Length: 132
Ligand SMILES: [Zn+2]
Image (cartoon, rainbow, N blue to C red; front, side):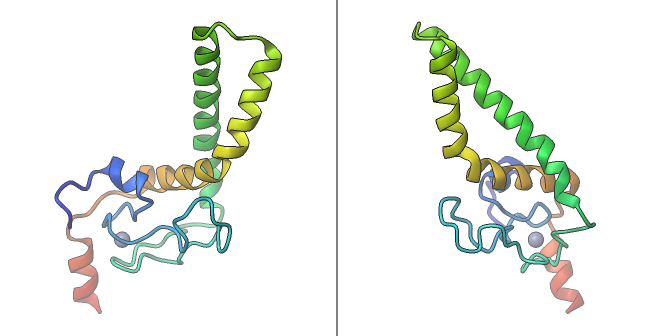
């Protein structure tokens, strides 16, 4: 396991939360739409189930909502700082930002959600290999 692998870096690299090595998505590229939604059923390295229960990722919508609000607040503050805030400018910039960041927010939300729910286990891969 890479020594510098933290929960944060595993979230950002869309890695399995348990071993921090296996990939959460079949296609990690957020702006390539082939197999965009496809996730492996379980982690290739440690066997962690990526859909522990039906509708597991519904909770990721809350994460996605929080990220989108944070993005909109940031846009609001930036427009205020550059003294070009008005409702029209805000909706134009926020609308563009929403469309551009949507695929990324979708994947990072799932990554954050499963990392919040699954505990890191440094011996996950070793234990998984021992069982098979
Ligand atoms: Zn794993």
